[in-house]
View 1 (cartoon, rainbow, N blue to C red):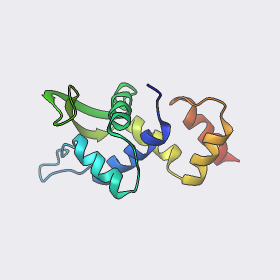
View 2: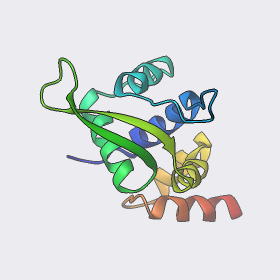
View 3: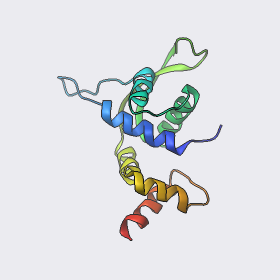
View 4: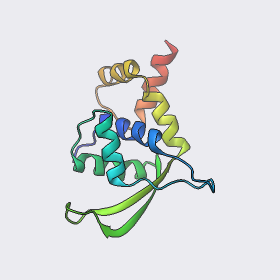
Length: 129
């Protein structure tokens, strides 16, 4: 499956909006449907497989802190449910490098091939120019 960098950016932006601390200063868990609802409110149109795959890859890249359950998502077959607790500092740094829509469009146009690790490097060069 192809990694969708627009989806990763939009999921991180959505997570940033809905992440919160409870009264005990613990992170409130964010579920898959919370993210899908937030994406819809932001008028982002990604199918569930694309979002689910992006979340898996964000956890592998250590952009988010998540807990994977043995419980399966309702109506989606064998996909496991998860809870996201936070965006890591690495995730915040990545998000800050792609937050500005104009910079994000320049990043996508300037690179022959995108990777999660090269995107912040390109963003930094664009910001310094």
